[in-house]
Length: 112
Length: 112
DNA sequence: TCATGTAGTGTATAAAATGATACTACTAGA
DNA sequence: TCTAGTAGTATCATTTTATACACTACATGA
Image 1 (cartoon, rainbow over the protein chains, first blue to last red):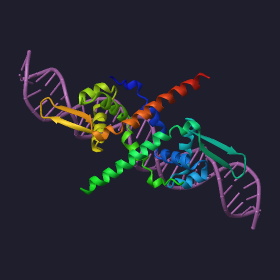
Image 2: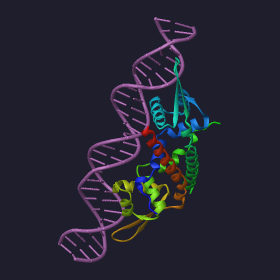
Image 3: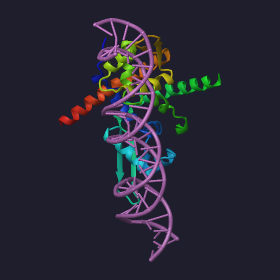
Image 4: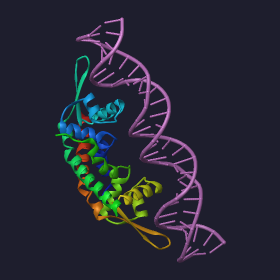
């Protein structure tokens, strides 16, 4: 049973999740719903405006999140998961669970 | 229902999967079993020896794969998934499936 | 004696991701 | 007129990842 590396699509999923801030941005939008730019910035401590903009743009580009601009001053922009983006939930949850177990395991090893 | 970013462990799982060659190395070892260094190198076209060594060392460090050295000349070293490493399978499969659908979706968009 | 095969290492470089910091536009209200 | 608040952009510096490519040790067989 041969895997054909050239047909491996794990990287496509990975490419969307990778980035220092993407997982947490996605989890916040998934679990807490729509957020404004400034709310996200507060919700993700340590991120710079530039990084937040970049990550959001990349996720929007892939149709994972949507961006809604209200023509107001001061500006108001809301970000939320698309239905398509929501299909990532099982993967994120599985990774979170695996990661939790992994971290625990590591901690136990250190104790020996 | 608040997610606490500082408790997000998605990155821990991600950290293990990320690397330009790790997913394919893992898939090959998962689906085709034990491989020697040189077999892996042939199986993963384009990878340099240095990168292969690096990625294997990192995976070994996290206890995902195991390395068995045969005291021979010329050297023989075999790599295989640990039981623990095998627990990543559902995640890799889910990502592969999601990635496949995502790629398809993108191709359909281009046609419009 | 010399080339071969295996599983690497060492050094240098290039490319990509991230970060710090300062800047913009716009309008409402003091 | 001055300040505050939002959602950014622009520029440059730093850090992290990946790549190219030359090099090593060792025993066997020609």
